Length: 500
Ligand code: CO
Image (tube, rainbow, N blue to C red; front, top):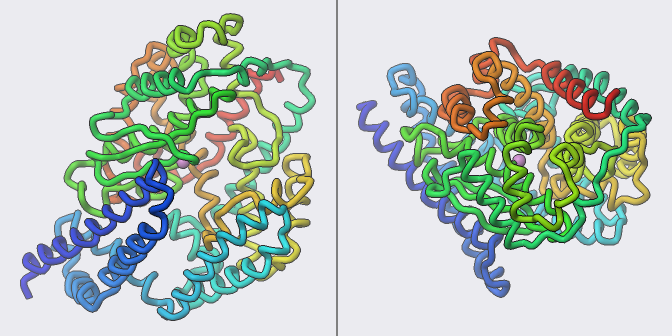
């Protein structure tokens, strides 16, 4: 066997998969950013055919042959091909260990379940959704058995989004968050500090908001020649290669800060992927290494930079120039306080930086117990409400603002939520290292974002999927995940803000 030749054939084979994925992604992008409404059925059919093609290439006899041929000589391969073999093996095992007919039935169940969930949420009636969710949970428990697991069965699902993360690590992680954040939230609730937020609901024209979003994007280092900004119902980032990473945002005339932070958040995701090494372009390694590391970059730009006083010292004059009437009686400090205002709320996606991770903790504990078979789906509304009361001190009045609020479970996505909280913690841990080399506050206040981006590129972005999340954290910070950097950051920030 000629390893070199097999390598080349393998890479060409992967190019075919990538091309189909790109085509499918472009259809999704088009659907979310303005394709004609009547095109939905035709487009769904096209997407379905592409998905089936991708699946069959990724699980084919050819793929099996490539993997078994290249794996014994993995040490002789170039590092990129070796990493591709490793990633393809993971996907191959994941897709082939579950019997095809069961997986098909499960996919159909999820597709149906999404629309049932929508109706149940609209009616605020969990019992409509419960029978389907029960089946989805059963399937997931069964799939974990097919796929195998080390330690807790939930570990297999967690690993899909955050390689290397386990229940053991997350129990310790959320333990620290619970111990540090819950009391801080209570202290703030008792604080007498008044934060002015009246001006945030004044009317801001969408055109001007768009101009400001583009201004900020350019300044913070999102490359508009390798991307674009459009509008969609829910903001997201879509990447093809470092040379084409697109983002969307959503403008609300009566809530101008929403688009600003959505735009900056998605820019954080996009700057990550725009700065992956060009050597990896066109391969499946040209992505963020995990959901959590991805989220660390978006939240770094959105929260750590975007909600800092220095950021607003730099950007406020421009904002005031665009909205001189609406902001004439608002100081920089008042704006900074308003965008950091913290109060327990029911909806995760609207939660502030401080309380956000507690929303994730509720979902983590429930998913873990479901996978263990410790709790029953029918009891979820009451379990949910109890946990919200315990951690946030508020109880949802109905299922719509409680257990039914998120789409993830209807699509069978178990193990995804923890990434959001991990992202917050990774971000703060990276910043601790960054500050040893850069005067972050000074740079942001002066609008010098290039050295920050360079630091992120060299330490994190350029590696793409070549390094695992834990390898990156170790390399950058010299230790494993340590949530204390995040909780210290929160304690300092909110103590100052609320004068605690
Ligand atoms: Co994100």
